[in-house]
Length: 517
Ligand code: MLC
Ligand code: AMP
Image 1: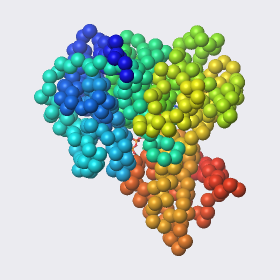
Image 2: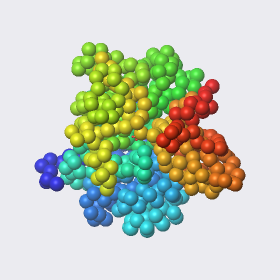
Image 3: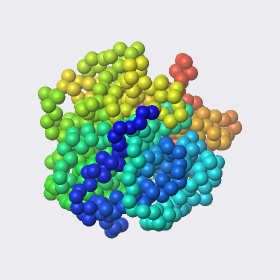
Image 4: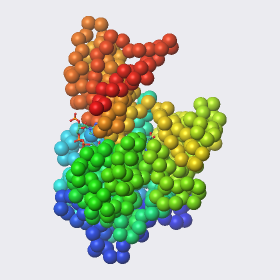
């Protein structure tokens, strides 16, 4: 790696955007606490000094599985400052899932809740992790106790643009989860692009209602507000009534489609309630055109839908204002808009031929936001790139004559439920290991709240008496709750084609009406 001539540490750019008045409120949390810009600076400096005091090798991972809190966000900033690699983990992951992540990432530091400490300690021991700290969502834990003793002044480590800032685990269609390695340059370029494209402006206030262990809440939302020196209204959990109550004080809201569906369920969602708002952004899963239209009717606002993924950050976006690269630039429901400035996007067929207008194929992308590869998986990384350097997203779509990108499906066997990804292969492997199960299949079917949910079909071993409820209970103790199938059916056999492949399309068709109202 070359010696960096300038400091591309993402935190530097974030810190440079802090307002001159550091005593102003940066975060207003729903527990009644407020944090000034000076608080963010000094407390993240203390945590960064604590991390630095460990003298960990460059590139060490800081794995974090904690409830959402402002302190958890400061730990992210501290990790950037210290030049280490942030590795956020969904709080829903259970010990069996965590064992894989910890074993694979071999973090130098692990931060968990006090409640999980006993089993996390065991995992840390097995992975050779020396430092295990706790952080709870009530401003307690050993991390904060240790950080308090540190200096509130810290100069960010000099980082090259290609040095790693974060690893986000994203499951594979087959096999285990892969850690997508994101560099300071990946994250910063994407954040700056979005700041301009979405017209972030002085006085903006963001309602932050998403979890902070995935791209949407951690990068798109937090970077957006911080790089604009904007205040955040920090909600530890999404509650439509609480969001409604904060709308008059805010200008920007970001959510997965389920959040919009739930807000639409509130009678208080009116033009009046949203009149102070400048921008509603949706993404992480398809936004139904009904939701898009109903939102327009009820509030007068047009949701801006964008598309992205862990490996790439944001790739496309409907326009905020006129996009002079295109003749028409309105926000169109059912599309994910145009490739963001700096992103090159093309659609190819299975033979590698680039397709034309309205032709459906695999979406491939290139740009400064595209990740550095999968952690310790060079072969998997190579498989996901074309010979001319495009990343294969696994999404299927088309580009219309006006330049709008539309996603029509996924080549990857993936269910997106309420914005969380569920990989059938992973759940099927857990189900196949349950006593009495011969084989199983998981398919995604439409759901009015979560967009899509998993439905399981299970075949018993000869002589075994399987009960659907018992299977669901058994799964609940092994995998994150959002991955548990919402329904399970015990059948005599799985539908297969002449090649012996399970015909999931037939199962999807059979169960598509299960949750429809
Ligand atoms: C919760 N449950 C879910 C679920 N969330 N089931 C399916 N899918 C989900 N997403 C279930 C739980 O298992 C539980 O069931 C019951 O619902 C109540 O749990 P809860 O924790 O109280 O749920 P709730 O707080 O209502 O959460 C729903 C939600 C949450 C929509 C607010 O799922 C959420 O925050 N989703 C956002 C995910 C996100 O940020 N994605 C961005 C990924 S980044 P039981 O049976 O156990 O009681 C990405 C890239 C990009 O994709 O482009 O942005
Ligand atoms: P993740 O692995 O969590 O980063 O999820 C990324 C995937 O979410 C993408 O590959 C898409 O399949 C999906 N996705 C994100 N945004 C959208 C969107 N606006 N519409 C449809 N799918 C989306």
